Image (cartoon, rainbow, N blue to C red; front, side, top):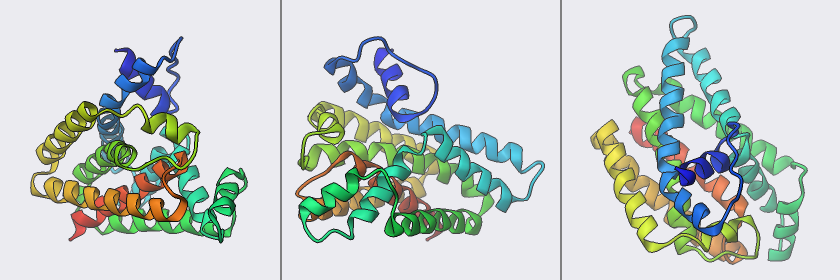
Length: 239
């Protein structure tokens, strides 16, 4: 269970800490990334059902979106904002410098606003009977996306992103892909299968873009890709 504890520590703000983080323990935690996504999605679905007993669906969804940010400590939002701000850089070096800046710029702020609006619009437009399945599917696939993105994309420079990517093994990718696909199909049937295919396309496009943009991936690229996959999943449920 040490791998599970490490995954919880990395992906959430829950008060779980491990005494020693070794390379094998970090590598073993990758198997649990989609499972952590399922747990977060399930918690969001349960919370939504409880909230709708008191509040309208639209207000409940706002709280759910806030919960999803809180449970991860805003880690993925920070990555998305940094990647968006870096779009203002003309060279690879300028983009790296912008991503390292802790301050948020105009591009980052606008992108975060549009991201939240896209999720809100998708979820409020969706058939309420499909909301819970969509939430769980999106959280599973968003965390699964880290693995193929890190496996197939070179890391642009040493840092958190490179430390993550260099430890992803072929067996890990195969196992997590198989059980993530099975899980989303079990939860969402045909919509889950479609969302899984869409998530794969998003990862492939993101990988190609980051290769051309900065020569590979950084830790921020994982956070940005998570949001791309989440929004694409909700969109696939609306189609």
